[in-house]
Image 1 (cartoon, rainbow, N blue to C red):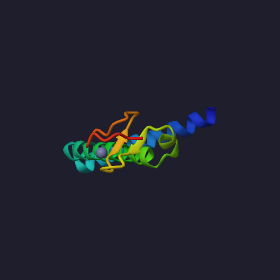
Image 2: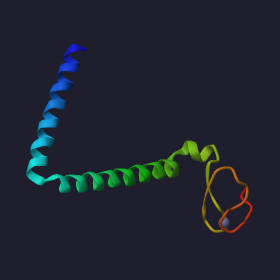
Image 3: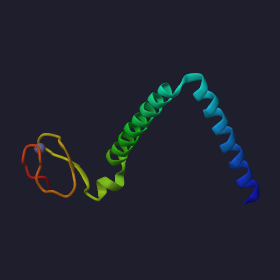
Image 4: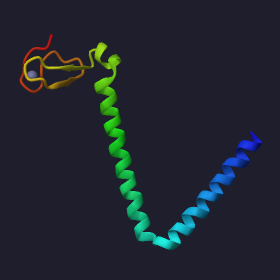
Length: 91
Ligand SMILES: [Zn+2]
């Protein structure tokens, strides 16, 4: 536990030093812009990953949480018995 804390504090210190020198090189405006774009990319990746899991996961399918309309192929989320896109009954 002590060794772990030591290692993590060293890593943290190294990160702070790295970020500080990087900041000095690039300037704060560049830094803020990079953080924002990285944050947005991370959010987009998270959303895509969640959607992929929902689409691929056999658990979600077997639980009936994700189905496709037999008429218009619209993806249905939840247990509704009617397609929200075309109104057809989903078995
Ligand atoms: Zn439909």
